[in-house]
Image 1 (cartoon, rainbow, N blue to C red):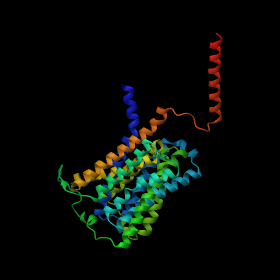
Image 2: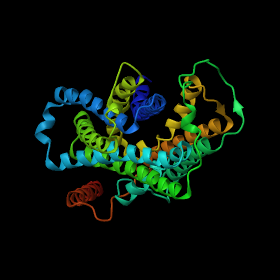
Image 3: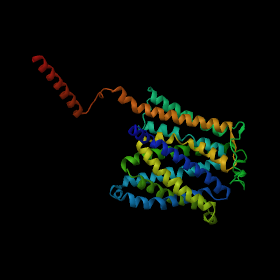
Image 4: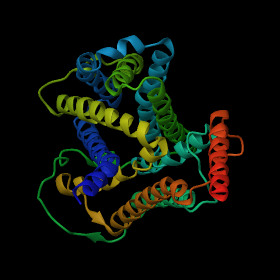
Length: 376
């Protein structure tokens, strides 16, 4: 009984860790919102985020993974550069650009396309087998679209307000209205913002694929995270210096700006990237990306608790759809894992030579045993 319970916990470890990751990323969104309310530039915050992340993860990599230096090749460094580019500097800044041209609601909805982009890229690169004719493959596809649909419902449909609790806490009372109360975007800006939002989702999908490839070549979680953070901090800082000519935007004090930079760098980047790298190496990029829409669920709950945001029928319905979609994908992955052992499929049509020899020897032994039995 104890052994089976331990096996169950071991199997659920990636799920539990990814739930923690999405909760931490929801905290990143909350701190982003509080920093913007305080007037902080988002480009500068992203640069500071990866600076603090680098300062946090580099000592861990040097202490815990000393042997990683000998296996650091040019290809690994190049993959680290691409990881920092697509997952660190490019994707968040594309999202911010999309946000500035459209609206928070529209940009968030486009951000929910990350699992779809990851699924398409993983299937094209043969990192994930869709298996549409199998029950597990169909469940993965249905669960992915169900999560995306739930995220869209949570974003676009409001419905009646539901007052489940009231904490009388509102951290965004001083100026949070300007984030959501915006004029409708012009048609040209809406189109450009949509393309930028789509590019952000594709960039995140590419980042998950790079993480999977990097984990195969360089299986050191802290060192890969350090490469990501170092390259992303350099790239994001260069972009911020070019885009932000006002040097006062870089000032940090003992306020929400410093707290946002520290949290998003240490918890929102170092912790989350390390855990996601481990899960990607264990379960694949699609499995990790399918948990992305859960961030909206956490944000809706936390926003109702500390930002005085109202829960609605749409947010509750969308959250339930997201949770159900994640559960369906997990069930599909478990079904795929059990199918080969349950069916005990015969060897492939073109087995290796060693496997073929082993089969011939076994057949020979059986025939000899039979002849001996007959002769006796």
